[in-house]
Image (cartoon, rainbow, N blue to C red; front, side, top):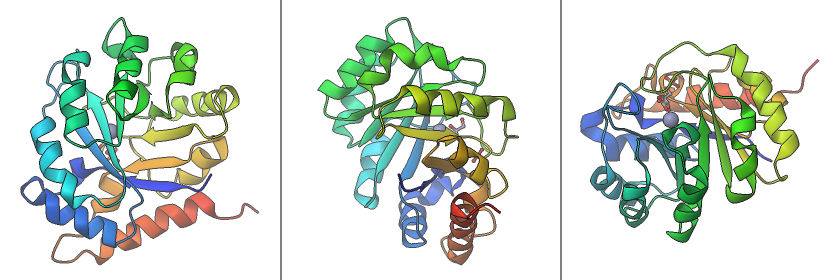
Length: 225
Ligand code: DX5
Ligand code: ZN
């Protein structure tokens, strides 16, 4: 599978999301990663379905919505109606992840399941047949700009081994050009990157976004020697 770079708008200018999305897509983003936080499942707050609906017309690629909320089920319809393409719920968010993933598919979105750094890959194995994507967190969710947690990498190879060939394996947290290659070698095909994409650029000066995306893509796909 081709490697996809998914900038997280958590690292963008919150007062200019529409323009930031258009800038980062013009600079080569493959997907747009949208982090929803509730101040309960994670110790931070971002925004909800109304913001996602407002962002939708600005996203020409794939709207990849990462729900860091608990409970999930009462909000699935609202995020589906807001236009999420991929809707990812955490396996730790409640006792009924199987039901949640079924409900996401029934609402018309592509289901994803995310796992925290302290959660083993085995936790999502029974639901791999229900999802299009597994998101392996390589930071504890809640904030951008944290250090990459190396110990999560072996889970990627396990999931690639267990999953169907077209399962997306997404890495979220601390991704940069310095670790992209190891992640892809382990079996990842979607790299979420917040601070390492938005660093140094702005809507007024978006060229650094493109340089940052190309640096990650080049590192991820370079031939090893
Ligand atoms: C963390 C979020 C990530 C975050 C990644 O809770 O889920 O998507 O934005 O940011 P960086 O790439 O800066 O670690
Ligand atoms: Zn995320």
